[in-house]
Length: 460
Image (tube, rainbow, N blue to C red):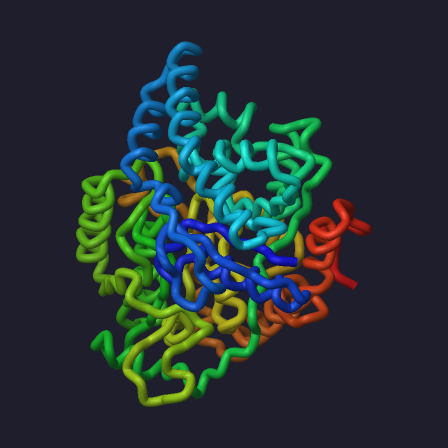
């Protein structure tokens, strides 16, 4: 079968860009040929057959439609937005038809684009394509609109009940968790004959000797007694970095070391966040860190994805990857208020580092019930300004004490990370046996239109 994968593209070390490359590998491991369409070219992807600018939220047409959607308040306004979407969908649909026919595409994998207002014209174009081509679509859905900021915009609540995501017998919805799949079933009853939960999966082959944590620390000119906390996220309010700053300061004070917080991702947000909002947030973090004596380092997305690592064949290379940051850390911080999954949770386990995290919905409904032992605080409201929590930490003093104990007692730390590692390997390993159990029903659906079993339970 010839499969075309469609995604926005973007920085290779950001979650969705990492995951689409994994899925292309999974399809190929089942003997399928993969071709790629991106909003921008992406390194290491399958053979690239087209670049569609409309797949980017920043495309002028998408920006105009999203601005109109944000301002819409009445049914008449909603109808106007719908008309704009359908008009913009016409050339996108024509392009998709041409590419499908030219390349003999038998199935399409769409990553994140059908469940969230990234490109509404593309979403409409896919729906049109299904009306005139007998083609199956796997829609992998990282987030749903009702889980994020757009849920407060009336048009998107209206769209979520109609076509975001679209439902069709030719679409298989792949959610990252059973909890998310349940939310989709409630929002789109009657359209969920094709729905499945498949989590993100990870390689547990971390070659620490090639990841040079000491060299990474040296590159940041850290103090010799630094207690290093790594926040492997973008620098946006939703990630709760202010809590990580407070946590780093308090833990370091208990163990009498100099706190350093490394934020790996770029200062770049999604829907509803202006560049001014993001710069103000970064400035507030710097001010808070100065007040609390935390050395703050911003990598601004300058780390490579891992794998592949540019330095695997050269241990002396000075270009660092994401795993270098994880392995240079004493603790990982991830006080995010909302995530479709939260790759840093499992990545911290793979790196065998303790995790300080917020109890966002996936943490509460997916990770903690499986027995993981993390240092968790209450998740804040993802829709509220972080101005209050800048000055008021949202965690109990007991978490600080336990984190300090883990720093000072290596045996206890090793027991914790080894227990977490065993759980993660059971559920989230990309070993062939686990991939096959999760992925085989997707391939069965693509080839026969049916699935023989559920994958939402524990792999046996």
